Image (cartoon, rainbow, N blue to C red; front, side):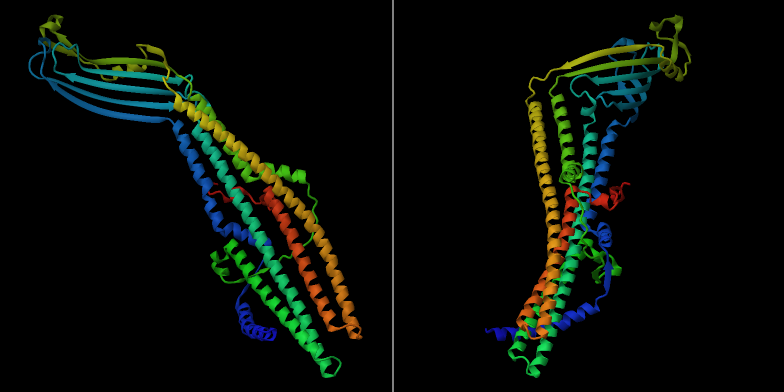
Length: 524
């Protein structure tokens, strides 16, 4: 296909597409947004962020669940029993022996963070039987007891027994840092998408300006050809240049739509029914404000604030705790137990004939209240105590030693990963700082280049007016000016993006915008 046929085909496609695009753009309502507006909408609507918000809440619930282990527990029980047995020797009496028991008890158990436990119990019992030769029937017995258990070697220690709580707290910190990382990434993605939209729009304007210059020159050439000042070939050259710049303009317009769609998805604009389908119109423009940046200070800030480093440091804390617990489990068991109990007994005393129970003749009863046994138990009339030490030596502890080796290896692995992440952070900060410096120089250089291109075009147009140059050179200078404007705009956008990349590398995006992490925690 010849270049003339290609040119004709392009004009046909362009003639069909341009009215449709223009009409569609005209029908869409516009939504002016600043960069901060877009960030606010993203933090409100972004779906990835909405998922991460649940992490801290789940981790906080795990802490509450772990702390319940040390909450005191109350146990209540009630039971009744009846036993019937034939007598098996003469002293029990003849007939069926019926014994009825009724007992109830209450106990409070408290686990201690050092690994021990303490319990306070009260037991009350009533026994009633028809067996012969009883001194007290029915009989009421009560016991108040206190038991303290404490491991002295294995399972001893605050960190060992509070491991689940400490791990849950570290997991909460990690989930909050993960949320922070998502916030920082979201802010950067919004900035990147926003400035890309700005660049696409401004680039389209530059292409339109270049196209307008080419059209003006084409019109001028046509008039001069009509009066015989130029050869007809100059019209063809100008038309070819207009067609080329129209193609550039169409491509630039397509870039606007693509960049806008990326920004729209990040801020999830369609989640707001009142803004659905509206075209985003950026309000902010890229500016060049030089900011002195210290590589050393930026690196220190990154090491202190980057979520990936903080999360890995928390993982190291957890793994260090696992090593301590695994080391503790290799120790022999040595348990101390102390018990103290106070009994109380009461009931109806049976009076036998001639005060001789072997006669088996009951002549009366001395009533006694059931509460007396309870009172005696709480008055500590009968003091009983015991102390014991129990030593447990495992015959084989291969499993516990393997757990210790595994915990140590996991700790060393996490420590190595932290060093790798620190190197990565230092590299990212260094690249961001160098990029800021490079883009600042590029802005200054392209600004001078654009100013010179404007002056050269202005001079060349004046020369064309007096016949000292040709349209070819004017078109060349117009193209050079368009390129210079595009490059200056790109340098401005790149400079602002490099500042955003440094904020992302140092994880200072939230502080610089006074955004509080607590505002995104559901538990707050």
